[in-house]
Amino acid sequence: MMKSVVLEKKGKINLRDFPDIDRVEEVLKPREVRIKNHTVGICGSDVHYYTHGRIGPFVVKDPMILGHEASGTIIEVGTEVSSLKVGDRVCMEPGIPDPAAQATRLGIYNIDPSVQFWATPPVHGILRPTCVHPEAFTFKIPDNVSFAEAAMVEPLAVGVHAATKAKVKPGDIGVVMGAGPIGLVTALSALAAGCAQVYVSDLAEEKLEKAKALNSAIIPINIKSETLAARVLRDTDGWGANVVFEATGSPLAAATVFDPLCPGGCIVLIGGQSEPIQYDAGAAMVREARVENIFRYANVFPRCVSMVSSGSIDVKALITRTFSFHESIEAFDVAASAPPADIKMQIVLPN
Image (cartoon, rainbow, N blue to C red):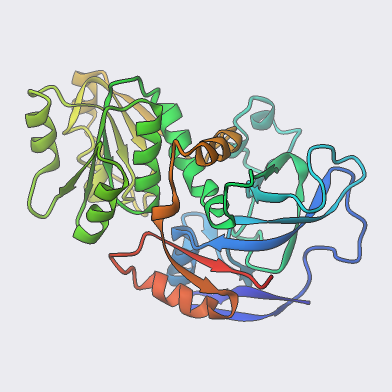
């Protein structure tokens, strides 16, 4: 048994002993490592499972350990592990695909239907003392990267994947709809990829203030008092933005994605939609817009670690609150209340 943060059912979380899923008494497979977990971020998906009990087709039917944004320390390695050793500090990519799957062979393992992704029913998450993970999806972090920053690599990977799919070019003008954690890492990723400016829109002034403080090239737009498309078109002499990232998950916002987009521009849909969205095919056609859809990420974790280490992307300011492991239930209740001044909350496990 190991103490774990367990979502029992919709609306009920316990910190309790849970049957060991880490095979503590078993010998590791040759290319596996055992990790003592250190820091775990609270993702919006964790909170959504807590408050709604499901996300699309993924339904919580049995008790499930939460958490998938994680860092820790290697405490054991399999006999054929070559890139890691005991004592290495690491972050972990939480999705384990089937190596024989066609999607994996094509390099798009994130959309392998059989991928095992932490804290996605029925797969257990990482808010527990230790885990066993494949070497191939475990990444050593440099000495200048903290455990807290390393646990931010997972959400950052979404933003980097989005900017990569958008094919951002130097000097592009970007728009990010939504100033939550994913929206802000996307804004930072778009700037790192070459955007000259990124407009970030939201309803919460507190989040927009944090967005503005991240980088002088981020322009906050409060859509309570200003129309996003009108501002972007005014600033670009009526041309529009080269790329628009939708990171709110709001059908109302998603229905307006083409409004600030320039002819020939790109739309990237990141926010998970809880219901069908209105898609303006005419607006897309007259712009010959390219539309990309994002589901998690693939092949970007090493780049994210390198950017955090080099300082080209600074995620420290996104971490707004930290809880101890024994405060985990309080942490989820706070996260579920969606305080407007908070971006990313993290939980630190006992050393």
